[in-house]
Image (cartoon, rainbow, N blue to C red):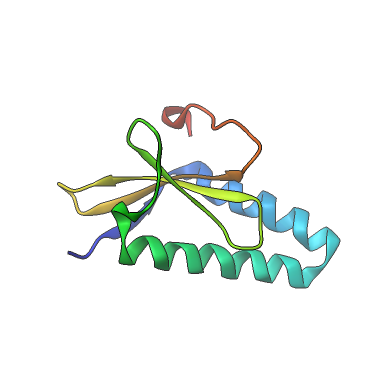
Length: 99
């Protein structure tokens, strides 16, 4: 079964903020962060139900090398993987409905 990815609007800002942070430290870190986000999405695409459910129906995947989780849910009816957030591992997730 093939799923398409849908990002909630705030996801773009999550990624921009994290990339900007790493770019200030070292531009290569920013590139590596983006690579790890793409890599994580590929893993999710291969096995969407293969990752831990943390918040009722929300699954999370910790990026390699970086302390960020991708928070997502699966909509089987629409065959979509909905990315809710890409947030630092030590922050509490915001209310997903407001993102």
